[in-house]
Length: 100
Image 1 (cartoon, rainbow, N blue to C red):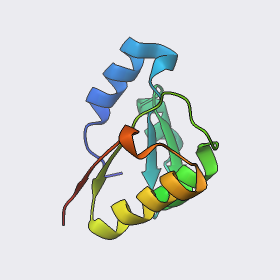
Image 2: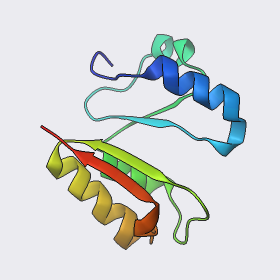
Image 3: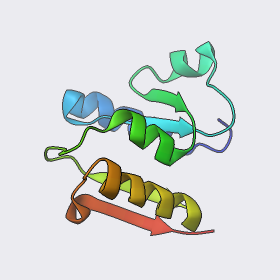
């Protein structure tokens, strides 16, 4: 949790846009505590690598959703593969930034 950023902003956007915006924070190492979840009730937290969380949550033939990814190249590349190949997410609806 100490490495997660923008939780306050994401929470405000989620509250403002309701069901039109879903925010899932993927935590690769540790599950969030009840205190973490209680502090950010508008956000969803799941444990696992980002591409694993994507595989568990997206259904093939996604509607008009957008995906925004940012992180180290291996994480972004694995998640892109999951989005496009497993979830059949349209590449035109994916925005990403690879950084180290």
